[in-house]
Amino acid sequence: MAERPERRAPRAQGAQVLRTEQVTPHMIRVVLGGDGLADFTLSGFTDHYVKLCFAPEGADYAHPFDMARIREEYPRELWPTTRTYTVRSWDAAARELAIDFVVHGDEGLAGPWAARAEPGDQVTFLGPGGGYAPDASAGWHLLVGDESALPAVAAALEQMPAGAVVRAFVEVEDATEEQKVATPDGVEVTWLHRAGRPFGEGLTAAVKGLEFPPGDVQAFVHGEAGFVKEIRRHLRLERGIPVSQLSISGYWRLGKDDDAWRSVKREWNEQVEREQEGAA
Image (cartoon, rainbow, N blue to C red; front, top):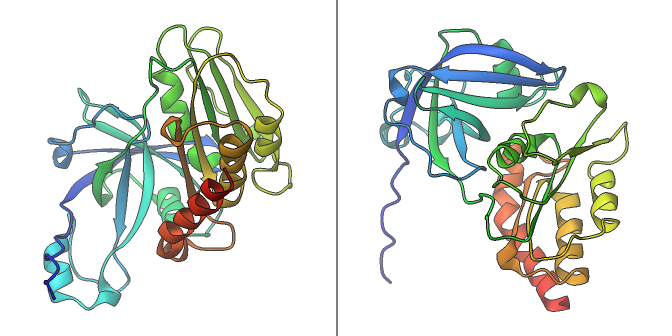
């Protein structure tokens, strides 16, 4: 049996907190900077993301983490935990990287960290990755997401080509969670208020009830996996949209923490694809 190639730990980069901003009651923006970002670059995607690394209690290594050394010298329980977050913006001239965090009190790992972050705090991250950007040749664009996808939706709106036809739907809990987003002329964001209803219920209804503009659509649908699956089914089976025109992913799953969701996400996505492609 051939041996598998050795898996290399991704290169870690270090940064420090410059400032934080309370964007909405449950959204905090953390702006990172420092010499560790000297070689940081993006590739033109609007869903660029980084993986923030959080050391467990008892770990004695310093930022930026040497991931290869940690995996070699430390037991797994002392390896850093990663959380994936969209790059809200990158100012190369100022060398400032902005990341938005949904915060619900002490729930989770990254949210509480963002709520406590102060200028000078150190952070290690991996990346960036990404794969979507608005295509100027598309007939029109469909953007759909909950709070977790809002940074990517906002970044996509800000980079839409001139004259683009866009239908953008964002679901938040209530009006206090709406944000000001720069959009092309004539483009508006439709804000849907969850108000205690199940995640994605309003988004699913909005997409199913939408009168599609003429032309081929490029769709970006991200957020809680349950509603993402339902909207994907609708777009593929009822609207007949080819997979090549879709960027769709469950960023998170209701009832599962990030680690539990990531452990089954690939298998879940493959199962969804098999079910829906088989029914097409």
